[in-house]
Amino acid sequence: MLLTRALSTARLILLGVSLTAMLMTGVAVSAQHSKLGKVDFPTSGSEPAQAHFLRGLAALHSFWFEEALEAFRASTTADPDFAMGYWGEAMAHNHPLWAQQDTEAARKVLEKIKEHDKLTARERAYLKAVRALYGPGDKLARDFAYSAAMEKLYRDYPDDLEAAAFYALSLLGTVRPEDKGYRRQMEAGAIALEVYQKNPDHPGAAHYIIHAFDDPEHAILALPAARRYAEIAPEAHHARHMPSHIFLQLGMWPEAAASNESSWAVSEAWVKRKHLPLSLRDYHSFSWLLYVYLQQGRYSKAEDLLNFIRQTRTESGPESVRFYDEMAAAYVVDTQRWDWAVKLFDASGAKAERSSSGYDTGEHASHNAGPKSAAEKTVPGSRNRGQSLPLFIRGLAATNGAPADTDKILAELQALRRQAGEAYSAMSMEIRELEVTALASTAKGSYDQALAALKKATALEEEMAPPSGPPILIKPSHELFGEILLRAGRPKEASQQFKVALLRQPNRARSLLGAARAAAQSGDRAGATDAYTKLLRIWQQADAQLPELREAREYLGQATTR
Image (cartoon, rainbow, N blue to C red; front, side):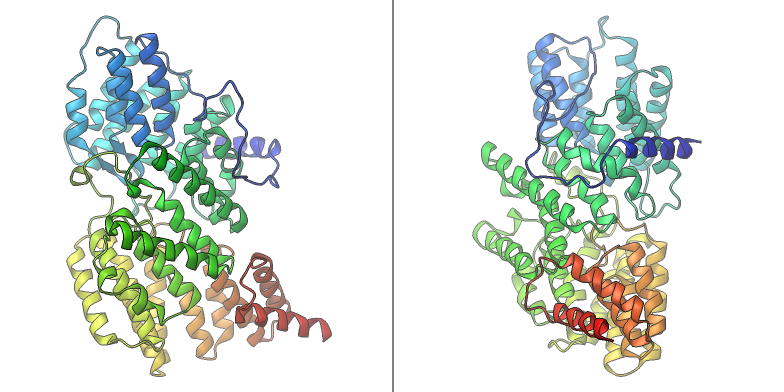
């Protein structure tokens, strides 16, 4: 029933929103609304404390944890007995969608709360819920306990949009990558859509709609919210980035580029204005922007971003940047400049941090709201998986002619996978091994071995969580399967693999190119024309000298003369 309500609500919203509207970097905000959105949360605190509290609340809904902490602390400085200010500070120590929290810091904050007669029954319910979030049990058990408490609050106060929004978020916070189905995501999406209908300027409503429907099958439901979120909370760089989740799911590269360009610029201005560490810049958006440029064939622009990161690391140290490995890996794989593997993953690169991976784990960048030692990671073994990435790229490069010992690389990849321990975490590492194995077998002409490895790799990938953002594998296994089938002279089978790849990552350039080549080699002139035409459409800004661009134009030119 909730899913039906979500679909009906989405259709109503879609009727009132132009799907051709473009996300712009400069967004206009109504004067009566904060640049973080419109929230309503009455409390028993003093008027000065309440003003800080509302800003913290709005920032919290956009996962701007640093700003939220600052505002909530300002509220309790203004009113030391303000219980909800401490509630907000504790909430800001929890990063629900990637299952991290600074448990120790939050529990110390909660100890400051003094029970007094001014507290309303509603406030006491919120305090009870947050205590469950930091109560006994492991992180997942506490997430479920908190969600149950928020469900009761949501039922008891049906007019409280904040209770509804936080309940929706709590449902998303119980989801783990290995979970099957979409039940909790759909329920969260239905609730967030109702909040969005009642308050279209609510930052949490738009934000949680996007997260709830952030998969290839449901992304279209979140497109209206994605169009609006940056306008609702333009001050928050994360609000400017989040629309690109839906734009990537739908293969909307110009919109995705604008979203992440805007997010990076706002975060950079914030860090500069407040004299914060460079590592707090929104490298999550920056890494997505590089991926988007690659899909647009704007390799020179992607290279500029990569060079900026390399220069920053040189001048300010490896700790000043994040996602270097993921960006370097995507650049090598999507440009197929295999000789760059050694250049980008040199001895100093191999020592870069690996654990805050955005592509590699499918998570958001970890916000530095608390001590890293206190953070509880979503995916056990993710450090090993991050360490495997440079080896994986060197392995791919070796099978494409770059100097490296493929057997040694495979042995090291296998050792890292065995150390990972947790089964889900090891899956992507195993797929990497299988991809390197397949390419090594292909180089030797052993196509049967290569295809057997890729059959296993694609089966494993389909067992993983649905795509959310750039491919966590860097090289999607269905895409590689199609490419090797083409080398083996089996274009019709290759077409099927590219079709699956494009369902999982719409308008991905390498998959479109593979689909065009497979169709052309199969004698499917209409299919080849369609795929090459789509490729040229998304490569309107591509570097002029790319051979793939020439290939597409030549095929289409010949097709029109036949």
